[in-house]
Amino acid sequence: MKPALVILATCWAAALWAQSAPQTIAPLRMMKARLESGRVIPLTSWIETGSFAPAGGCAPGEQNIFDHTADLRSVRPDYHNPYWVNDIRTLIAPAYHGARASAFAHTWFWNPPTGSERCLIIIFTVEQVDAECQVVHEGPFLDAVVLDYGVLGAGVYYSAVCLASLGGLQLPATPADDGEPGTTLLGGYGAYYLRALDPVSGVFTLASRAQPLLGYASVGTSAPLHWSDDNPPSGSHAQDECYRYVDERGRAYGGAIVFKAVPPCAPDIDGNGCVDDADLLTVLFNFGTDGSNGGDANCDGIVDDADLLDVLFNFGSGC
Image: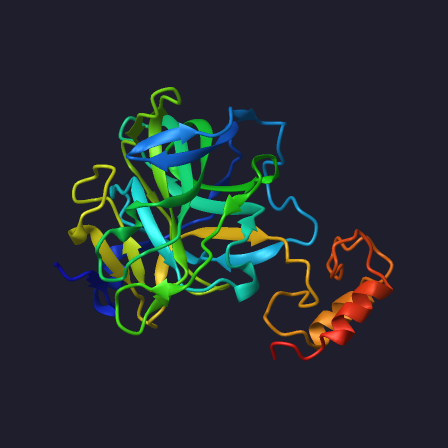
């Protein structure tokens, strides 16, 4: 097995480029899909723009449960990585293990040699990622969404997508030993960058030149593992395409993405694993409302005495 590449402070400046503010765009259409044996299996028809909220959050009370977008960077402009996978070590709290993301946002660098090209992106999740670079993330895939952005010129792009019309995106559920002693990962996420897709046959064509932007985690945590498809780009991963991105301060960089989800119906309002003062205050501050800003512990559509009692009777649980 070839060792993973470690990018250290001595070569970091040459490896990554700082990024200016990206252009904000919305997909023209999207669909739910399953990835199977290198093909895309549609689970819904295309949903056109106007049938879903294309920007930002879309569910009352949702919050960022994984945010990997701090200090965005990219590899050199001519770098090509059309298929990547990154790990999720932890989400904001264990209560979100196995949850469905209600929305996500992602950022990428699109740089076709011809100047412009049709852009389709598959965002997917996996239950297992292996830090020993054994490519175990190749299957089974948990869930996937296909986004069609039409023809795009070269540039850095940002897109926030509401997933309500597709039932959300399944997130990994079970932390597991990833193969590296002492390291446990929850699962992972990744993307394919495409220029063509035939939904009937499931056959797709990789983009001519694209790459994710990289950031470090500010919500949740990630190991420095990052799978790239660059040696050469082929739509699959080999053991020598497993890299570790670490900056001069030891921060792990990975594919830039934000997952949002609605807190579960429970007295632990903020989902941090402990029923405490914060949960009680959330109920009190939102008392009498519909719970759009939190506090509806039993999910009955109103923050009332029942929610207050639920928190009080469980106060201190998990702390």
